[in-house]
Amino acid sequence: MLRVKTIIVDDESGVSLLLGSILSELEGALVVGTAENAIDAMKLVKDKSPSLAFLDIELPDMTGIDLAKNMREIQPDLAIVFVTAHHEYSLDAFKVFASDYILKPIDKERVKTTFAHIQQTLKTLEKDNSITQPTASRISINLGNERVFVNLGEIFYIEKSGRYTVINAVNGKFKTRQTLIELEQCLGPIFFRSHKSYIINTDRIERIVTYPNSSYYEVNFENYKDKALLSRDRIHELMKYSHYNV
Figure 1 (cartoon, rainbow, N blue to C red):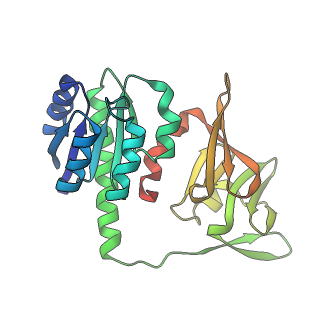
Figure 2 (cartoon, one colour):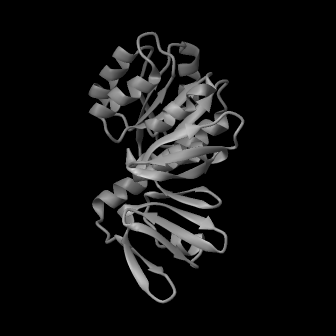
């Protein structure tokens, strides 16, 4: 069983004790330190080299968002889980590729599920680092009278449009009768099903924009004017899914 070195950062000692108690019940969880402020948390990262950090958003000397950015400068692959009473920071959490965003009061089962997901992700990364496997770098698109090949990294997003599927890429738009499900099987791990009609390239995301009273977020891409949609109920899954990109 993979041992996951974990730190807990919260200025409420009761929260740290509760999280520590929950994690103590989980196989593979190893809490190597707790902190009540950002300065002590940074020291823990330097001294203990954790794989996972549970962070409060509002700390006495720095926001948890800024702390996460600073931690990643030392430990680029550090998994971050925010634990907060404030739901309004979820988009900021997404920007630092948090693995999850847990609201207080803490749900014990949510912590267990999140830890299991991160542990499995770390196991997969460890395996991938030890075994080099060939991966496809291009996708073949059937346009009817011809077949074109597009580099996966050059795709911004794929959209279902009526009876067709449209691949939006650096060198143009390609319309095919291949379904999203068929194309999804050929895509690499950087692609994410953000909506029933969209698959997005997470490496190409520039920002996520929210609109009041809307059931969707708008996904903006680097150097591309067209936009994709992200369902509100998918944003937390995207944060988990994107951990490997951190």
